[in-house]
Length: 147
Image 1: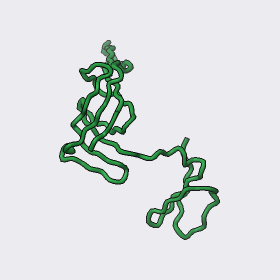
Image 2: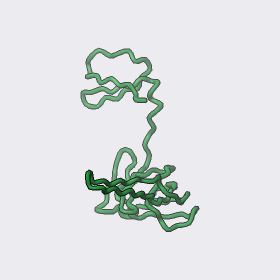
Image 3: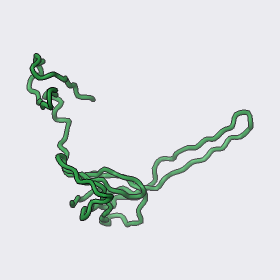
Image 4: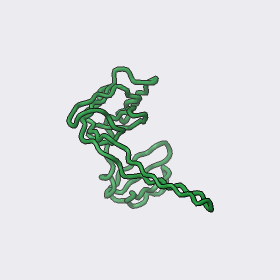
């Protein structure tokens, strides 16, 4: 469900929104009704890591599925390929990596994604080809981020 929001110019007539949180940015005021303010959570430290040829934005406590990693279930892994680290107010971007930054993760499980069906056909040529593929993954729990 989307939160209702009203954009008001400062100095205009205020709409009756009851107990609402407001933040003024320049000449625009952003108001949220009090009932919707609990759905937004505060962002703490996050990092952008590189693994399996892809980049992932992670925060402590999150679970992510990445390309399969050769590690046992329950094992702790340390990623040192950290591209960026942020804490909500400031961000440190590496060139290309942030020096000294690490992300510690715990392997939760190995598995396979849902099947992707491939169907190829040439019309009027009596050619049909069906194929399927399931990609392996490793599920990780982000333990900590050190910058």
